[in-house]
Image: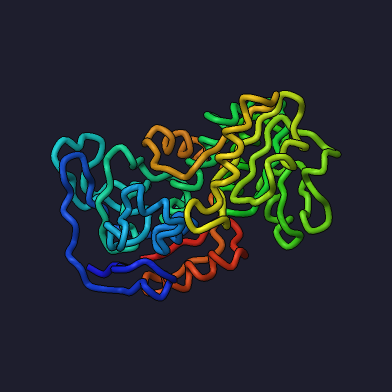
Length: 324
């Protein structure tokens, strides 16, 4: 099968299209014929091996342990391993795994759900990691509720476009922050107000919110707290930049150390593996029309390096998807 592989950490140039063996599903795993695969910042971090702390977390100190890149996917079940009970060959599924930039990939049964009936494979592949991260940030960590005010910093990106829609689905009033060029998109997915961060400082204290989601930002926690109500909650979702060792996680660490001494709830969320129950919640919302995946553009498998370069330029509206 064709797959995008790497044998060393580095820039997108380390990725190459190669013929490799088709994986074999183990116990509790499902073999999927991949029709589309999502691209997000996590793919870049695993490709680059940055920050260095990532390597120490089991991804490979000197070289990637998993040669094939990619996490999000959507496709059809080709075969199932032992003890798999929820799927059978021919089922249309979506979810995440290691190595989705390939014609075939194996995923854990619990990381998959039936694909929403009203979207195609490309839209479905844009959902798992980003939408589940937004869901966790809002529902589990942020404890968003009906009637609350929510500020989403980074509202036009992969996690942000889902955060806006999910907050609205949970009954909140949403203010999205993005550039002027992306304001129409953020408004179209349900934001009640849109702030152009190049013209106005959204955390200057002139408006206060029950919940602030800062997605891959770099504003100091002290400034973000200005935008909170006296008992408000700040959730820092991911982070870019920072040093080589822990990257953009300095703010997360600072927030966790600060939270016992302030009235605000300061919390953090990282993109992580999800359970199929989270995908099933998202499927219901997608099929009900409350959430719509936003796909900026698609690339063929051979052009994964170009897709990652475009992602890192910071111009993406929603998600990038690889089509197979």
